Amino acid sequence: MRLALEEKVGEVERARRSYADGLDAAMQIAQASFISQFPELAGLPPERLPEALAQMAHQDPAKLSRVQAIVAGSEQLRARQNEEMRRTAEASRRNFQNYAKAEDARLETLLKEETRDVRQAVAQEIMASAKASGIEPEELQRLFDSEPLMRNATFQRMMYDAGKYRLMMKARDAVAAKPMPPVQRPGMAASRGDRNQHDLRTLSARLSSTGDLKDAVALYQAKTAARR
Image 1 (tube, one colour):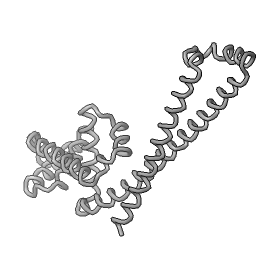
Image 2 (cartoon, helix red, strand yellow):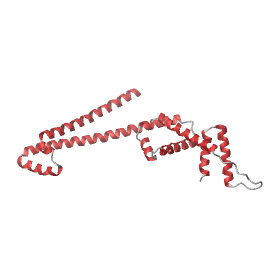
Image 3 (spheres, helix red, strand yellow):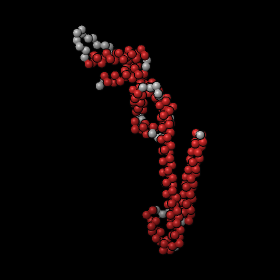
Image 4 (cartoon, one colour):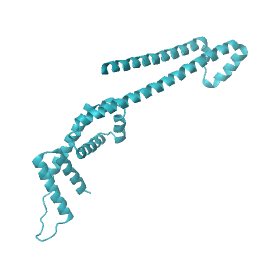
């Protein structure tokens, strides 16, 4: 059933392309015919065309009628050409939307074991990595919304894994660069900074023990919050 549907879609697309190619060829033939029949008009600048047509109407009305008929036919072809371009663009947009929907669903299956927090952190890391490479978020989103390769589930998973790896490396760097614990006098209440350092040490120890990305994300987010 799927193969039959794909073949039918292919037939429709081939027929559409053949029709569009036919319109292009007809437009080129009409332009060549006009030049061959009225070479004196073909080379005129646009501002002198009304004067030439007025002179033709006075000297050879039948010739002017032929000019008008060819121009009218060309305008009809151009209108059909523009309409076909609009229809093709709309069909392409619908096809991409259907493709994107199917690939997004496939990606959900590939990432079904990933938690929401991890997904969000990895997505942010992907955007940050792209920006560091000179790709603004708006441009990355435009590519994501228009390029089939970017929306392919396997390609998205590759980007996800790369972002996940970068995030893990940042978290490990944070563990390696953790400050020495401050000395606290007996009997004194811990300050907010002391509590933050304790939390970071706890998260660092947990990450060192588990190596889990969820713990890496928690540590990275805590480090970011502590710098504010």
